[in-house]
View 1 (tube, rainbow, N blue to C red):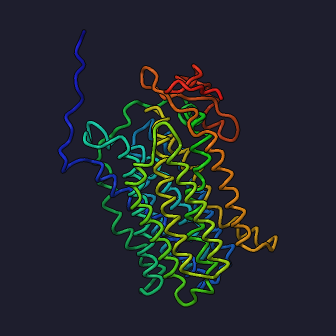
View 2 (cartoon, rainbow, N blue to C red):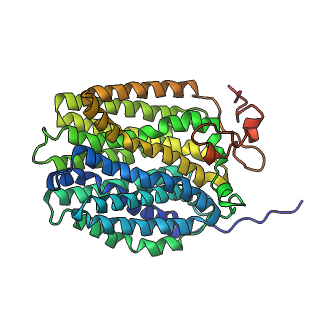
View 3 (spheres, rainbow, N blue to C red):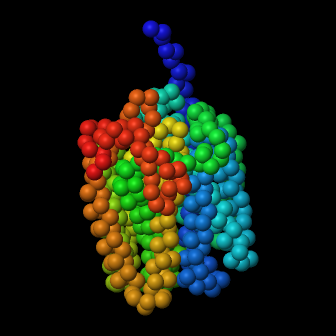
Length: 452
């Protein structure tokens, strides 16, 4: 029997490359969330309607979803570094354009579109890259959940810092519509060079053949992905958009004179709590159940209920409580869902499957626009609509209970992830792949029937 040569020696602790990527993801996340506290500012100074400012959030999603679906698969094929570099460049361009947002809605829309491309690319590719840099040989002391926790933490901290800086300038600082974006550009520029120093980990070459084949993500059809991860995914960002995007608008009367500062406070509380619950998320997550995802969804549903209560009572303290509960649900829900994704994905489509997850999840950002439009058309109070959203959350939680221990991904010989055929709107992404690996045998990793 021939001996297998060991991989390269692990890098010393002081040079472990995940730290560079952590900073890159922090500044790209900053790019996406620095706009949120400025919504009230734009509404006050430029007299945009509530529907218009919520529409700016929708433009952000238009950049996010294609970036998620394309960047992950492209990085699996061409490498993490070039695609992540493009994300950093897009972050610089987004802030540069938004610094001219005072000139009109078109510049805001272009800047928000670029910010969506930034966050979509950096989050999708960065999450997969962080997982690969948080294991042997790059970080042999890391546990199996370190990559997901570090990616979630960098996203949460970057979003919190971006919102905090922009909100402080918007409420009390000079040139609030320009200076926050210029500060971000100055701090992000060095990372366009530093990201190229991180080691490349996508060495499999991805799926050969035409571009259409390369963009397929067979694991997107895995039943564990469609019946657990995608059921909970949109709620992670729906609660963030409702909790610190929509709620400040609902409480504008109760916070008159310091509404921008209040919006900033809610954003920072939610994102800081999301960061602090990472150790708890690690303990709650389980390989053989959806305990972590279900816990996150339960907290998210409770947070939306508190948002409804804050609106009815016009109480800013209840709004603060809602933001804290929302942050705990976001942190646990996102980390647990990413760990599910990493257990399902094969090495060749890890970034691609992460992109599909984020593409579906970020659709939750459209919830404030949908709620505002529905309230305007039907005349139904926002609190009543939010209670309807709570009911939908309970229904999704019941679906998770039904699939709690079902369809667990196996580990067939050769290391390929179990995949399954996908039907419906994601069929083109999954490429119509049929059940493979352990799933094709009709059982999961623990011998349970996967055909239920």
